[in-house]
Each structure stands twice: as C-alpha cells, then as structure tokens.
View 1 (tube, rainbow, N blue to C red):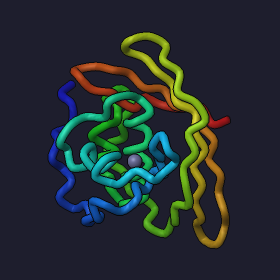
View 2 (spheres, protein in one colour; view 1 turned 120 degrees about the vertical axis):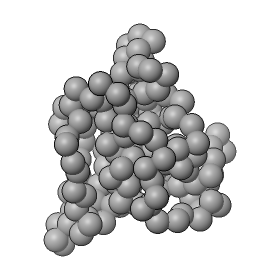
View 3 (cartoon, rainbow, N blue to C red; view 1 turned 30 degrees about the vertical axis):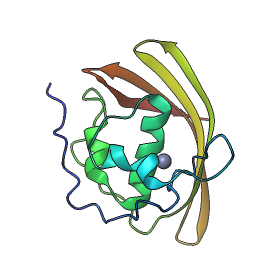
View 4 (spheres, protein in one colour; view 1 turned 60 degrees about the vertical axis):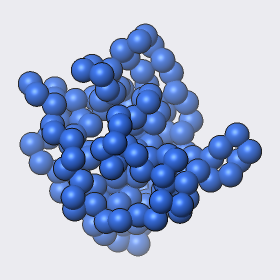
Length: 146
Ligand SMILES: [Zn+2]
C-alpha cells in the first residue's frame, strides 16, 4: 500500500518557529527546544522524523496542534484507521518520554506518559508504542497501555 501523501498539513495552525516545542524536548543544557529545531520540520513535511522517539514526539505535537493529517500520514498502513477525529476538547498538558529502545535497524519501541485534560478530568496515558522503519521513514504501528 502506498504511504499517505506528505504535505497534507494545510489545515495545521501556524506555530511560532521560536516557541518551545509542544513535545517538551530539551537540549543538552536542559533548555526547551524551539519548534523549528524539534517537531516543526516533521509536521511541516520538510523531512521525516530521524528516529522513533522523534516520530513519537512529533505525533504528540500533532495531537496538541490538531494535526490529524500528520497522524494518519505517519501511521503504518497495517494499523492506520480510515479516518481520525481528534477530540478538540482535550487540553494536552505534557509529554514525558520514559525510554527509547532500538530493537534492530527497522524496529523500535518508545515508552511515554502523555497527560491531558478532557471534560474537567485529568488523564494520564502511559504507553509503550511500536515503530517500524520502512520506505525511508519511521511509522507508528501500535502500542500497549501500561
Ligand atoms: Zn518536539
């Protein structure tokens, strides 16, 4: 199956290039990475995420910014839903990447905790996600809730 086309982010709201990336990644000095130096280039379809953790982070940012097109475009064809309706009422509160395990050149797992609030209720999503590298890019496959 053909991968979903890139460049489907026209509906993505603009995000300031110098603003801290929604995924919360920090540099070696603990400073927040800017959108333009983190997930921005992935969501702007300039280049695919460099590794599974980068893809996981960029997908979190897509949830924050309402980028359903990016989520579908980075979802492996074997598990990709036909469509995705994001819950626009969800307020994303933060992402913590707990671990990034490279299994081999084409398989990796990322364990994370994502927190959000919906209908006044705080939700903590702890998941280990599986990723595969095919056709020159990483894809989200599925995950186990922990
Ligand atoms: Zn980021």
